[in-house]
Image 1 (cartoon, rainbow, N blue to C red):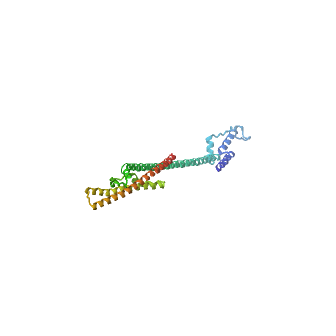
Image 2 (cartoon, rainbow, N blue to C red):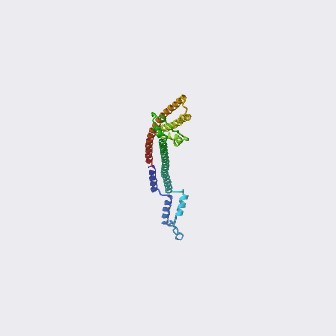
Image 3 (cartoon, rainbow, N blue to C red):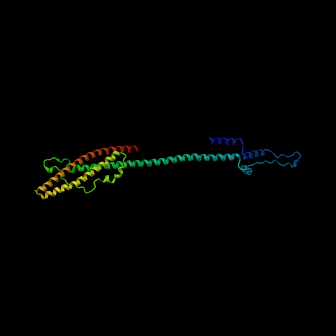
Length: 285
């Protein structure tokens, strides 16, 4: 508003006071129309012809410069140009600033969105890997030693049918995904799911250790049978071996049954979490 008022004042000055160049033009025009005044007492022979003074544009400009520089109008025009340049620079700078801020903000939001998508994709991939690993391992166990272990009747009449008679071999680490990504499990927001994953894997490793320890008393029993000595002392040892194997078999059956339920519950929880993360990922698109 202040700039507009200043421009109106300047325009009013222009309309009121002409420039020096205009004044020179007016004077030169009037002089071209007047003759030089000659006294009446002057003889006719000495009367000189009338002199017409005509000032061209360059002369008027020269006179204007020599008589004090630019005129008021020229100063006003220069001021208007200066104010116009300043106003244009101010408006242009403001919009440039807005455009720059908008561009930086958009770039930051895009990068943040990419990081969020990448984080969700990594979580989904890890959960799916855990689901596949625990499912595959449990299916293999149930198809082999686990299925046989569950069906053993520890109260059978035949003493040789009361205990688990299979040797269990675990020569390598079968929980590769869990062991390599254990730290990333802590990034899951679902606290119950984190606890469920850790509990299920811990129980699985505990069952593997129990089966490996079971190999020793079973091996001792097989070594005793090689001698096949019908002596009271050795028969007592045989009964102790069998009793130990039966007790271990019951414990293994309890572990296997509890682990089976844990695995099924974990699979349900993993499916639900993967579905929720997929919905969240779709919302970021």
